[in-house]
Amino acid sequence: MNRGPTSPPAAEARPESPAGCVAEPLRDWIRTRTGISITDQNQAPVELAVRLEAERHGLDPARYLQRLLSGGLPPQAFIDAVATNESYFFRALEQMRVVVTRLIPERLARRPGQPVRILSLPCARGEEPFSLAILCEEHRIPPQSVQLVGGDISATCVADAGRGLYSPLALRRTDPELARRWFTPAGSRAWQLEPALLPRVELRRLNLLADAEVVLARRFDIVFCENLLIYFDAATTVDALAVLGRLLVPDGWLFVDHAEWNIPRGAFRMQEFDGCVGFRPLGAPAAGESASGPRTGRVADAPSRGASTPPPTRIPAPLPTRASGPAASPVSRPPPRAAPAVPLRGSALTTHLAQAQVHYRAKRFAEALRAFDAVLTADPGHPLARLGKARVLADCGEDFEALEIAESLLHGAAAGGLKLAPADQVEALVLMGLLLHKKGLKDLAQGYLREVKRHDPHHPSLGLLRPHRPGDADA
Ligand SMILES: C[S@@+](CC[C@H](N)C(=O)[O-])C[C@H]1O[C@@H](n2cnc3c(N)ncnc32)[C@H](O)[C@@H]1O
Image (cartoon, rainbow, N blue to C red; front, side, top):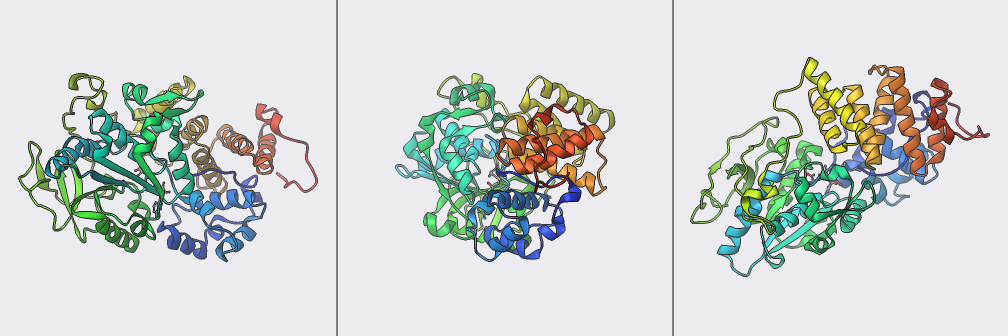
C-alpha cells in the first residue's frame, strides 16, 4: 500500500462513517479503474486512502470524494493509494527456481538465439522481477537470453522500482548471503539493489485489465501474476484470466500465488512441474515443458486444490552459482516459512508473541515481523500482534501499512468490536500521531496527539503537540 497521511483525531470526531466513506459509487469507481473489489471486510484501507488524499489536496473527505468521482481530480494518486503493494524478494521462490533451473534453460536449448520473455504483473516495487534477475545472475543466465518486464498499476510503485531502494522488510525472506551479494546498506534502514541489475528489468505502469495488452503488444513465455487475482471478484477474475491467456505464448506458463489456485480454470490447466504448480494454456504440451518431455523433473496435471492448500515445498537442486558451488549456494536453501504448518494455539501463540516482542526490542525486524505474522495467521484479529506488526512496519519505513493497522485498531476499539487495553490504545494513537507528523500531515497528527494527551498527559510524544489554535478540531 501506499503513502500518505490520515484521519482526523478520535473515532467520535470523524466526519464520515466507514460505510458512508466507501459507499457504492466509490466501490464502483475503484472496481472500474483497477478491478479491485471493495467489500465490508477490506474497506478500511480505502477509508484511510480517502482521508490521506483529501488532506493532501486540502479538502475535507466528502468534497474530495465528490471531486474525484466527478472527474475533477486526476485518478492516479488515489489508485496508488488504494492498491495493496505488499511484496518481498523471493516470495514465489519455488516457482522462480523452476523458471531459472528448468524453463529458461530448456527454452533456450529449444530456440537458440531467442530470448525467454518473462512478465511480472503486478510487480509492486519490483521485488518479483528483480528477484528473477538476481536468480538469473546466480545461475549464469546471460542478460541477452532473458527479457524481464515488470508492470504495476501504481505509478508510485513503478517509480520506486526504478530506484531499487528497499526497506529491510522487502528482504525478510532473502538469504543473508544473497542479500550481501546483491544489496548494499543505504543509511540505517534501507538497502540498495546492485545498480547493474536495474536495467535488466523493463518497468512499465500497466493496468492488467485496461492497457497491458496494448502497451506490451508482445507475448510472454512466462507470466507471474501473483497476489492480484485475490483482490478481484469472480467476473473480474475471468476477464483477467482472458487477458493473461492472450499475453502468453501457446506453450507458456502462468504462475499465481497458491492462495489463488482455485481460480476458474477456463482456458487454463493446472500443472505440477518439479514440485511447483503453474497454469498452462489448454493447448500447451500436456507431458512437460518441451516436446521431448522433461529431463529429470516430474510433470503432472495437478488435481484441483482449494485455496488453503499449502504450496509444494520441494525445491529443485540449483545450478552452480556465480560465486560458489551448488553445495554452498545460498539459493539452494528454501527460505523460512512465514507461518508454522500447524496453527498456533494457546501457549504456543503466547510464546510466539513474546518472541516477537523480544525480536522487536532487539531491532531484529524481519524476525519480529515473521513472529507477529505467525500469530496473526492463527488469530488474524489479535490486537497485540496487530499493534506489534504496526510498530515493526513503522520502524522499517512502511508508513502507510503501519498507519492502516493502527487506524483499524482504533476504529475497531471505537466501534466496540475490539478490546484494546488503554495502554495499547494510547500506543496506537501515538503511532498515528508520529507517522502523520513524519509525513508532513501535521494537522491530522495534532488530532491524534490531543487524544493521546487526554489519556496520558505526560506522554513523551506530546513534545510534538502544539498549543490549541482556533479552528483546530477538538479532541
Ligand atoms: C500484493 S501486490 C503483489 C505484488 C507481487 N506480485 C507479489 O506477489 O508480491 C498487488 C499489486 O497489484 C497492483 N495492482 C492492483 N490492481 C492492478 C491492476 N488492475 N493491474 C496491475 N496491477 C494492479 C497493486 O498496485 C499492487 O502493487
